[in-house]
Length: 184
Image (cartoon, rainbow, N blue to C red; front, side):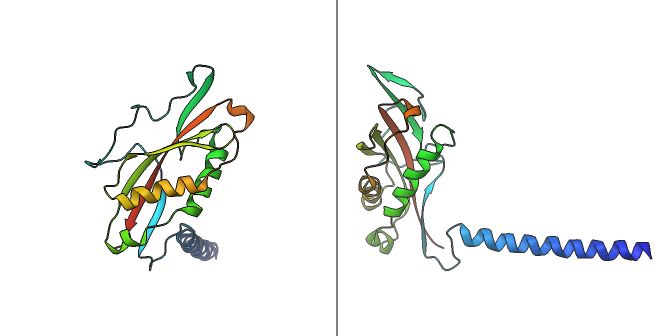
């Protein structure tokens, strides 16, 4: 009798685990922003300086370092960080910026029709009070429309929130990667 109970309990637990896993996989698939019927995707991608390939049209970044912490220039402090950084000091602020840019960003219709895709890496600078000081393409996607859209998304999102006091910065340089992908 005991082995039969153990067998039944094992089957019930197995079914429960499988149901939970199937439910979670459906939940995760539904919340990652993709849909089986999507024609294209546009997303801010992690690790802006970790591109596998570089275009002939790219411009070299001013510095080989992706993050210069506390670089001092005269009496003002400047820092450079990736938009996807999980640095606890910057994470909440960067998340606000990323969400604001994502609201403005879209796939240019003409580029989509022509089948243009690629990745644009942009560096932009925010000053202490949240104003946009500068924005530039540092690695081109190879398509002017995509590069222009990336810059537009940043410029139209400004101004940003002022820096929290604990930043102690005059300017924050942020590097972001904009990936334009046509669906299969």
